[in-house]
Image 1 (spheres, rainbow, N blue to C red):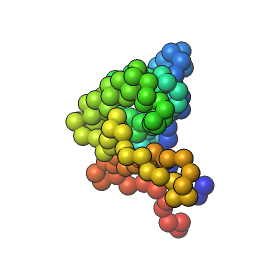
Image 2: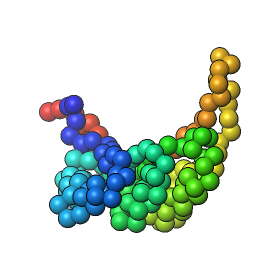
Image 3: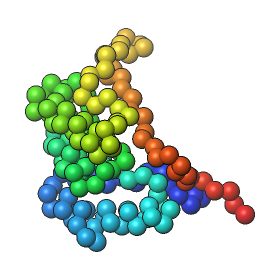
Length: 144
């Protein structure tokens, strides 16, 4: 890849309790990623996943460690499920707690539906800017 540092590594789809426990236990994936971050090999650590249980599991993850990114499905079909929508709201509050009351996103607030430019089915338009730490470097370094 010709890089000295990766910007973001994410633990993917920690939905099952045994996999979540393994990743967050001593000697697990999170510990390895923290060591990589301490060595300057990765800047940010996140969690990602899919399915109706993932917002609740991401909240559990944030209670263990203040992940730098949280990625999960956010669409009209899933938000129509009151349980999923409630989990998204709880996750939004958990992200704000984990990140010191600040979140660079608007989780749980449905954005407006926009018509597809070619008149097809509506698109759900959403952006969520990345959270950054002041003074963090990283990325590609010039070769000597």
